[in-house]
Picture (cartoon, rainbow, N blue to C red):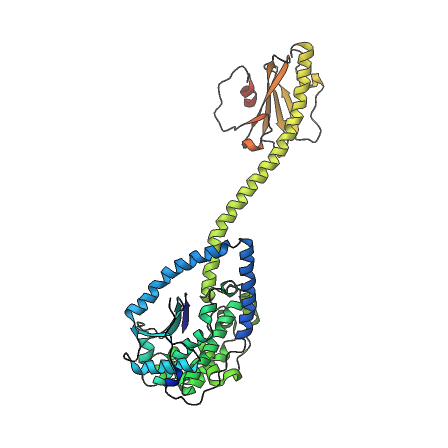
Length: 457
């Protein structure tokens, strides 16, 4: 037994005074924790909606309106399927069922009569209530009607249960509690509490408690075997629900175990159940309520992992590359400053002497790399006066080359910088260009001189 929701006209009024008299009304014993759970979820959802409204400046409600319209079109297919293929139960169509429905509607205190349909379930034993554009529907699958032919009063339990969802406004609250319903333990606990409460509505609509038990027995033993089912033995099965796996799947599910529902119909609040496994409680606290139990949560986790793992790997790789590029930029800037010191000394010598013929090594211009720095050695090439810097770890595979050209305005040397290695342009010092060693070597020209001959040594 379940309910479906979507929110154009009100259902027809009916007059309770015209109903057939009933036996003394049974006290309605709703599940004691439903109200508390609802209050907690209402506060959480209300604060969440308020936060989204403020954070999006109200745009969230435009989005919700769009989703509502889309859902309206989608859900309309289901409603029209029921109305087009099901049989609407009225005073002229199955009047016996109609009278039961009218009586039950009065019993649960509804002032408007929902639309009532029968539709084949192709073997499924169930019933449900739904809402579409402010109109309520209760649908019984024909298989459950046929199964209870020998105890037609038991049908009142199904009718009452579904009317209970309407009376308790479960179909109205469904959408705006959506955020809280996902909360582990809380959302599933509220759903189970609703089922327990609606069972009490079903019990109230039955003439006898035994008929209510028969109604649940059909769900447990099937359309024929329910007649021979030992109900007490079935109730005793509830004592076996305390184990880890039984508890875990109930704590993450929207429905209580059926044997527990039978026990509560039989004994009410006096029904005693064993304490659930502590480890099941602990693990359930990390499993969101999806409406499909543990399996649904696992599917969401797997789906998230399939998306998040590649995204995380891509994000980490991107971050790692950016971090490496940032580190390389700092290191190459330090190297460039160091090699530029050597270039300045060569330039000063050139301006003073008019040539560099007297330089055989940088020791001749009083340059030596800083001890412990990134620059291990700077070679001077007498053929073209270029400088080739060999670096220490972690840049041992990298080389920096400064090649001079005559600057006619200043009368000194102007240097062109190249970094040999696999670096992005973003990592290069402002005056340097990247040259990947994997690239084919260009032909020599006057500005490069013997550069690649030096690299080949």
